[in-house]
Amino acid sequence: MKVHKFTVKDIVFLAVLAALTTLFGALAMPVMRSEVFGIQTLVTCLFYALFAVIALKKAGAPGTLTIFGLFTGFPLLFMAPVMFFNNFIGGLLAEIIVMLIFRSYEKKTAVLTAASLWMILTVPLSLPFSLWFNGSSFEHFRTTAVGITLLVFAGVIVLSVLGAVLGLKIAGELQKAGKLRPSES
Image 1 (cartoon, helix red, strand yellow):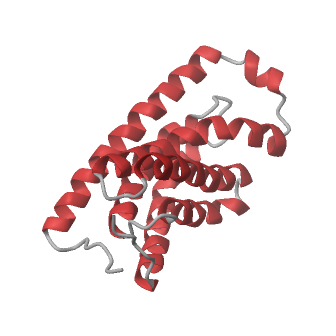
Image 2 (cartoon, rainbow, N blue to C red):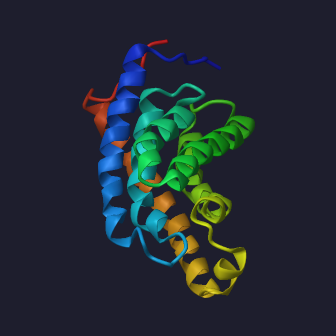
């Protein structure tokens, strides 16, 4: 198993890709004040998973998703601290899970799993952070349309996996065209 190491190019690439991802995150602006739990993630998860795959295919080192989560979360820290912690901790947890199972990002299934899990994990992570930062009560969460929340969560799962699959296809085409070469370690 080849151990990948970060290069300066990788870090710059992750930062630029995170900025692009954050622009797509603006799609959630119309639903930012919605009372529907997880709706912001539902609106953006396809793009976040897609760009996470591209990040993982380019950098490929353990820690890539955590750094990418930190970079995508940082601009959100000033607007919505919950989203910063979701992106960062979701990336960290997804990465830990994938590294325990696959040990690297060499297999496509590892990349697909990490990118999908990242956004899926942000939904349950939102609950404690929302309660803490927004002052919402658990009772409010529990009694407001649990069925809708479950549908939103199912949608996040489906769209995250779809985004990751699309990301694999796009990354594959970019690699064939020589536009997305993995870094040399």
